[in-house]
Amino acid sequence: MSTKNDVNRESAKGASTGSELVAVGVFTVIIAVINFLCNVIGVFGPQIQPFGAVLAVIIIGIPFALFIRRINHFGLVTVMATLLALIFTLFGHTWCRCCSRWSSV
Image 1 (spheres, rainbow, N blue to C red):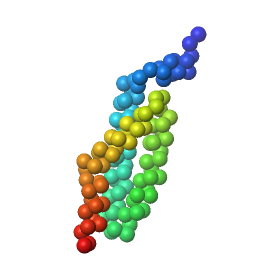
Image 2 (image 1 turned 120 degrees about the vertical axis):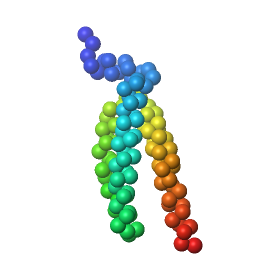
Image 3 (image 1 turned 90 degrees about the vertical axis):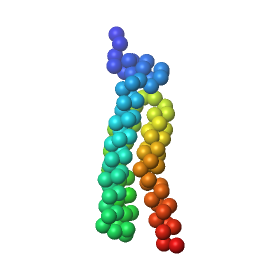
Image 4 (image 1 turned 45 degrees about the vertical axis):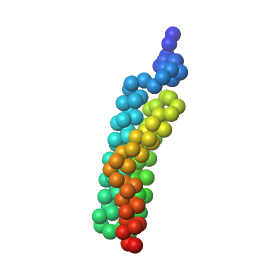
């Protein structure tokens, strides 16, 4: 008799399933939105910006733990990290930090 754990082990041996790739996309969007919303706190002043980063790390831990619990294949965290890096780069997250450093010169 086949149990749910046996089915999960069999599916974990092959390639990533479509539902896992959808989960990567959904959790990537959730984490990106939470990060952007928590870092908006910087509009109140540059001294408060580090608190937004700390708040984002604490809040993002919850969906990331749920994501880790849901996936069964090696490498999906790397896929999500690559997508997040691409999203942050396209929205100018890294460029803002570079420009703010050089704007005072």
